[in-house]
Image 1: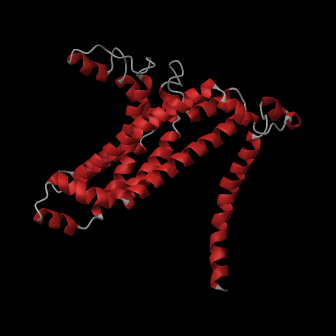
Image 2 (image 1 turned 90 degrees about the vertical axis):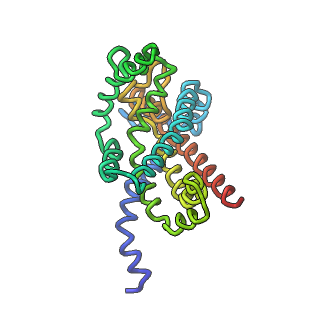
Image 3 (image 1 turned 180 degrees about the horizontal axis):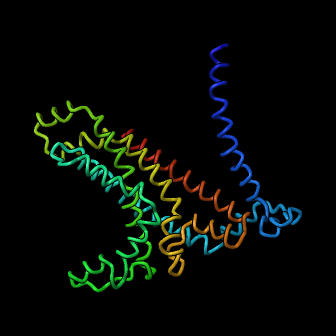
Length: 292
């Protein structure tokens, strides 16, 4: 058997799985987004009509959709830098030569990632409780009045950002730890011989060596944060006053609350275009920075 035929023979099962479980559903969703697929069409396919780009036009003129886009954009703009900073700081901590019980802290920081979301959401709802929450108790000791974290439209999304950062930063920490351990120790020794301080080592050695990893982690984090759904679904159900409705939560309501499956499919593709545009911008900015 020729090498090329052998390669295709090994790749075919994986390609079939990807085609059946990815490309076919994506193509079906694209077709559905061009129709008025709803509860009536679900009952009788003869009620299905082709509407072209009408679903997309209606979404682009929908204030509720743009409110969801604004909420998601705020979540990404604030949550991603916080998550990256927490991940990198914790990675530097557990990778430090002075770290004590580094294995314990690595496990402790990663534990929220593998913890059931519903379970930790119950704990966080108690921590954020207006009257009995530990966070408000700590604020009261500083003379600050209690905050209705999950009931105030101004504070609900920041509270969810705080929860999401705590829940997910450990995943990126593991990637950063692996990248830090791959940096040659000779670079740090040379920097110390030149009289570099700790901050100069970080800025002149660590960050440049972590640049490819930072790009990878930022792309993964942005893509994940754009798909915000579980946190508001469990914590606030999109409230109060729609202040925590994300694009994905809006898609869920369109598809499974109002049964506008055509519109929900259109939301999915608009979300895909948003993620694609932001990812392309990240790659472009990174290349421009490297070119300089």
